[in-house]
Amino acid sequence: MAIAEEVHGIDWAYSTPEFLRKAVNLRWVQAGSAGVERYLALPELADNDAIVFTNMQGIHGPTIADHVFAMILALRRQLRPYHEAAASGAWGGSTGFCYLFDPLPLALSGSTLGLIGYGGLARQVERIALAFDMRVLVAERRGAATVREGRVPFEQAVRQSDVLSPSAPSPQRLAA
Image 1 (tube, rainbow, N blue to C red):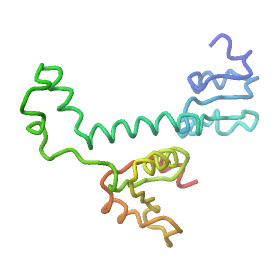
Image 2: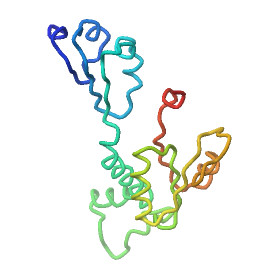
Image 3: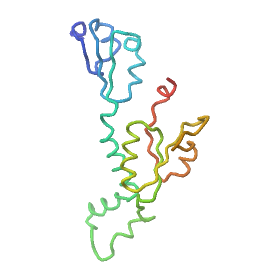
């Protein structure tokens, strides 16, 4: 707090109302994420035209998309029973692992991925889905008057998808 009056730029972690009120020379705040609603809700930040507020939109997309597919694969290929079998010493043997699965693991190829939101992250997820030969549905905003080219109504995307990947902006961003 002692340096607040001297700083010109800060990391978002310092963006408390108290710090922002004392930071009279502040001109730049950098968020570490794409989502910034909680910071823009601070009047000390949102109402100060002298401060440029930047975020990390797009920077985490490839990494998060990889993680999304790690989770999809873990669920669809039922990796937990494999892990548990290996941890308990049941790995191998003449019976195989079919007894571990009910139902059997599902391939991604030919299955349908529904994207809720279609920003940078969803486009990264879509790129990987297409490499797995998945069908991709992009959900149109709920209640949209018209469905744009390449998209389906929200309810249809939810109904027809084997896997959903939500990456829609928060409701506050949708209203803007």
